[in-house]
Structure formats: structure tokens, C-alpha cells
Image (cartoon, rainbow, N blue to C red; front, side):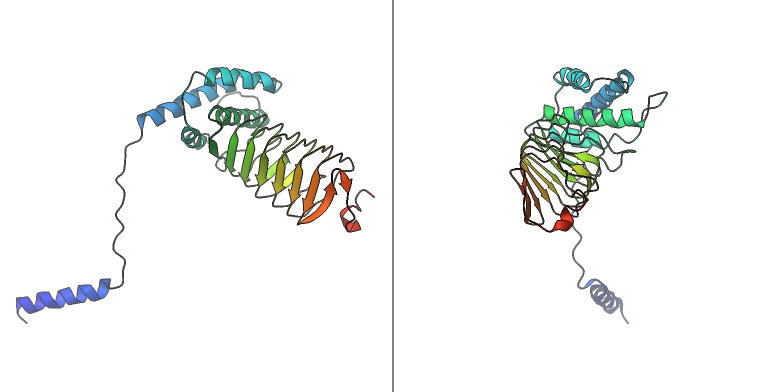
Length: 262
């Protein structure tokens, strides 16, 4: 076989090997880390560390939020900055800090203050990587928050904004809610205590009594219910398309739903 014939043979063999394979996708050029993004992240981490050093278990929530909003008013950052920052909260502070509950409360309040700062933009917050679920996320918030991961107690407490939670609520959700909407894609231990208005949807199951002291709004339950509260004064409750409560009055439905408190 002469050299020309050999080259043709190899070329034909190569084409048979790679026939049917898609061409390599052109990869985007890697860009260096934006200096501004890195600076904002560090400034927020420094502020969170400072807050850790000042907060105690018995610190007033309103006072914490007031301090945070005063300090954040002097800073400039975007909804994207907040999302990137949320990935940075991956460990508890070192040293003799009080306890895990205090830390989880502080993180939840801190992230809520960040979301309020960039409102009305929607903010995505990632929490799955955190050592514990943040508590008080959405506390008295006027912002719009998307959460990826599970959250802890008092989520959406007295919120006046909107939340989408792509996870479970390991505590109560939407207590004293007076906002636009909250949508939980997973389970919740309890929901809508003293809810005043707005729309709350729970796709998963609820563990404890729901809607205790509810006076308004609409609660939609797409999963299993442990039981409804005995004290529902207003609003609507819909379970899997069936109206259970309308304007605070229970409808004529199967007794099994109410047998826990008959």
C-alpha cells in the first residue's frame, strides 16, 4: 500500500468512528471573578460576623432589623449579589457564640433584610448547604423571596410580601400573614396561624393543626391534613379542590376531616 492510499484509508476509518457524534459545543470564555461582586460579598460577610457578635438569644427582633436596615442603607448591591452571597453562608461562626437557634434566627433575619433592600425585585436565596435551616426568613418582609431548600420556624411571620419555597418548612409558615402570596412546594408542620389576608398554598402535607385563629385570606392545601383548628374566624380553606371553610364557616364535607375535634 502506498502512502497516499494509507492516508485515505485512515481518513475513512476516522470518519466511520466519529460519524453520528454531535460537534463539540463551543464553550463560553471563562471570565475572571468580578471585583465588585467579590467586594460586596465580603462586605456582607463582615456585616453578618459583626451581627453575630452583637446578638444574643433574647435580643429584640425589631431592634435587630432596625440596626440591619440602617447599615444596609449605606450599601449598594443587587438581587444577584444577594443570591451569590447566600452560597457563602456555609458554616457557623467560630468561638463561644450562643447556640444554633440564635444563629439560625440571625441568618434568617439577615437574609430577609437583604431581600427587603432590593425589593420589589425577586431574590433567590439558597439554603440547602447551610448547617441548619434558617428561622424567621421573610419576617415582616415587604420583599419577594424564592428559597431553594428547607426552612425553619416562623417563616413568613407577619410578611407583607411574597415567597416561593422550593422545599419543606420545618416549623410554622405564614403566621399572621398579611401579604400577597406564599407557595410551599413541600411539607409544612403548621400553617396560617392568625392569617389575615393573601393566599397561602401548601403542596405537601401538614403535621399539626392549621389555620388557628385565621381571620382572612385563602389557604390552599394540596396534601394531607392532620387537622383543622377549632378556631377559624374568617377566610377560605380549600383542600384538593374542595371548599372546607368559607368566610370562617365550615362546609358540609366528610366527617373524617373533622373527627379530630368533634
